[in-house]
Image (cartoon, rainbow, N blue to C red):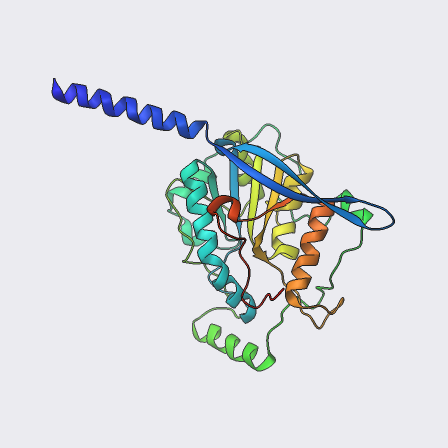
Length: 298
């Protein structure tokens, strides 16, 4: 009898805990920009409450290696805070989607990979959701703020050569050295793993997820343009935001507009806030202050 009673008690407690998580809301302060006098833009903020169960965080291309050494250094700084955010969000009931592009072979047998592959085909699957998106109509109103035509690498030439030699010695292609997601990001069995816009869209629709947060790199390339990136999510109707302090750009200060690397990232974030979607910061999940790179001196 005691076992039956205790079993019933645990069942009730589990049901209550599940119910509480089901109703968990995430309070977000979003920053965006609107046209003002002349050619200027005005910064504005809005507060929204998102249901945790109706929200996903996509971790974009947080790879275990990169061809740009400075990009690796910056990512190493950022990863601990990113993992904190993911743990907090996961506990609240947010779906975490790990999207290290070109690395799916490393996760062939992982439950998270199987979860993404097994989602049923969505009835509203956008026709181009499997492709890169280089621009959305709203961006036609403005001018792209940085020149990334050189690939954006900002390494010292000697360090860059040494770094590529090390990658080659590790058996990696120096131009595409990534093989998996960064080991500092924890992947749980009930997380999803995919680099496919189709799979991710199917997964979001199957779970009734309308709200999407992007974290990861690089803002001006993969975060914006991937099939699961900001542009695709925004133009296809998802309520998407960028976590602006947990991202980085590929921008070389030797290229126009000849500003610091961190200012280049800020310019891209401003562009996103004007034409693509609002942004948020990681402290809204974990408290404290927004993350800032050591070299990003105000």
